[in-house]
Image (cartoon, rainbow, N blue to C red; front, side):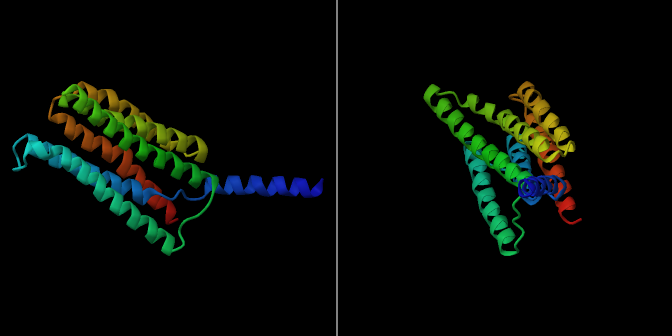
Length: 201
């Protein structure tokens, strides 16, 4: 019985340590925020005539941003591994899984929306992807907050969920892209910087 109690106590300490320890991944969120936030601003500048950019290539602009972030993601991941910064804990595992699923969900949903637009010959349907991504962000932040018990993450989740209907209201308005860039700053960049600061403590 003593051995069982010791094992249970040890497992409890590991779980609590995982909750109190740093959550790795802030650099990935910050990088995503910078890449896609900048893409929003380039798209906005293009549709408002501030820069010479063919509107027929705007879709490729976003797929190019996805490809760029994929490269950055792999570079950051292998850099972390080479420095031995990949730590295993319940919180980090849940955080990584939630955000990996979030990324896959966004890519699959964007591809599905593009297919729907092609089948129905209605490019306007693709605008759904602008707010749909924030539903995934909100879900990932909610899971992360519950598992890691970082309740400030709920603020990021609420901001992400609130962004979705706001962007839907701005459909067809160039200001939607500016709102999207600002929302990315609030829901990805700033929380990412917070996690990076916690890692250094």
